[in-house]
Image 1 (tube, rainbow, N blue to C red):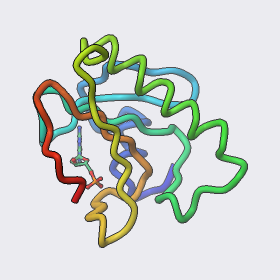
Image 2 (tube, rainbow, N blue to C red):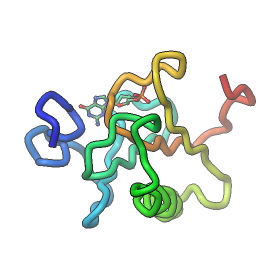
Image 3 (cartoon, rainbow, N blue to C red):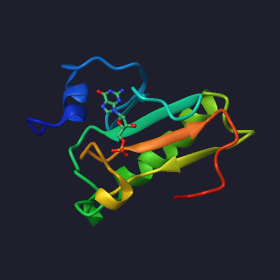
Image 4 (cartoon, helix red, strand yellow):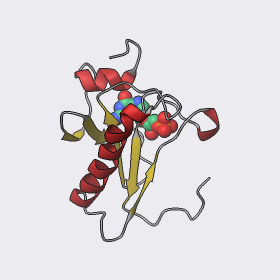
Length: 115
Ligand code: DGP
């Protein structure tokens, strides 16, 4: 837990979230500012600021986040039509919360632009 991290506070239950999944390593909840009909964030319970801070020790955790995202997307009905997974790192990517999170975006035809 990092004192000033909003996502650490969500993990600790100090800030409410619309949670859709939780296990011993990650939680997932709806984004407060959805960019698509379905916009869910998957975050590790462990505080990792961004991908620059991730280490080989986090390999299994990061893989677990990806596999949880695919299960959550399937449970949300996105498997057939598809969805996008996004993980922003740093200012050029416009990362705004410095606790790693995987965006699951779906429920509409997304832009062909990756930028
Ligand atoms: P990023 O730009 O990749 O750092 O995305 C951060 C996302 O986190 C952004 O889409 C809005 C979301 N967010 C920020 N604060 C909160 C919050 O308190 N609750 C929820 N559910 N989402 C939040």
